[in-house]
Length: 536
Image (cartoon, rainbow, N blue to C red; front, top):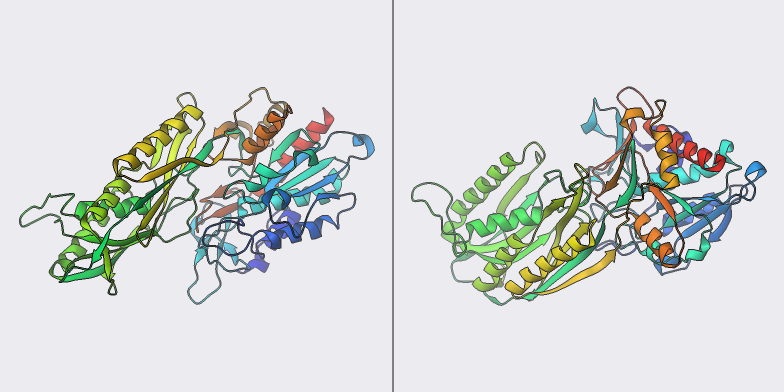
């Protein structure tokens, strides 16, 4: 099935979304990716200019700064809604590229891995060796929904504003820097959530921590051979919403295996049986999938050296370690794959001290859930994602992305990371790329309207859930910026059901098992919320 055969309701949302998937639109500053959101920016503007009554408030085709590259549209109310304050529809135009060299137009197909679970769509490249890739439903579906709402004849008199941002997936640059005066609405529907019956009214804040250290290199010792090791096929996923699902981190797995096999770190040799340890040296270790702070590493590689006579036994022990780890993490990591093979000659290895320091440090850097919210069952309070290790010459750079709904917990985690750096004589910078938490307001008028719509038996009934989320949403940044100038911006976040965002397994549900058109359900919910807001 090719893209022309994909269809779901509402037809206008489907049409707009499939058009978006034809156009490259990475975050302008995604690492290792060439390009930016301009193709989708230009598409959105071309559509907006064809809609009667819609004013283009902000669009600068040649803008380079993220705050200037947002799009703001406005349609004043008419008829009985003339003069009413508009509601803001907000979505971001960028997507995560995974893999970083993914090709467009995307080949959108029915997800073969979700048979029996309703209808889901995903992306797979057209090639002789097809690869899965991110779909960009996060947040292309939000952009498509906003455009469809603007052309809906049943809503044509509603006063609406649209804020389409850039760089949400990297540093929230658009939300952080757009001119606040360009929006007149004071109620904002963020269309970037990923669970259909759920209303989000709070989210975590976050920041990154960077470690940097120096290494010493030595000529490859005589009698040594080099090997390339890899860990691949892990689930990966979003480092916020998927962090509590028991998914492995490829960098951590590789470091754990190498530390166990390093004779200077671990001496647990058992004569005649068991896994041995070796005089190994590291040449390189790196993340090989998309280097995104908000994506859990799913693929990592290392190049190591060890005595030639140990190569076969080392390979067997490495495979045995990985096999045991895979068994421990089934069924979540059923795709876990390891490989060890001969590598080409490399002149300069890290010396013993540098090798052992790096492996021990990667083991000690925290990963995953740190704390849960005590009075909100199942919701993570604080977590961290070890998302990058890069060796460039004699310099090692390591990155961790932290999230928390409590500022004190975020500070405490950053302090722990700084102390780990000090122990291993690495320089540590904390608090980078910070964004604020979005503190929940249970008395929000917009929340109460949305909850009334979602809890209606004709909509989601008892399935409706009102919660906070362990991920960064633009609502937090936008509401915080308006609060600084004394304006209360009332926000909620809703969306269709998307699984495994930021990973090549990303999938959008378009139909439930019972045949219900789920994107249509979401669209109906947004329409009803707008109707109740303007009827109030």
